[in-house]
Length: 185
Image (tube, rainbow, N blue to C red):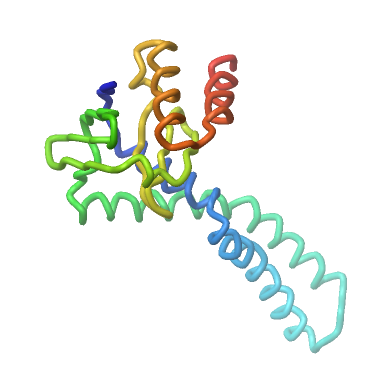
């Protein structure tokens, strides 16, 4: 089975953002950066007022907390956009552009104008779906990005998942359901 598709800079940026929010290891980083500034402001205000609790401290900290929580997601997003673009510039964007994925008997072969990758099915660790793209993880931080637009019809999509299920032993039913739900909306 051969799929031809285009991976854009936006696909790559969305992958990095999705990965950050899915990653269990990054959860502690997200939690720390969510609450550490709020606690710091509270302690700073507490010291500033001479170690006495007041409604003023609570009010200032509450306003800061609401503002911080409201803007934190956008700050992370902007940071990942900048990091992703820098990574693209430094790496030469060999993973972007027109791609051809061939599902052979033993390997997933991906070819583009700059590279050829031959990956055994056993290397597929998991699969996720987001932003109309399927992510086939081949390591903790690396994945094949396959836009839904790569499939010309439902039969081709079904065949793709059937081959992957057979070769990897992974269950793709949750991804198939998410794609169907997205289509309904």
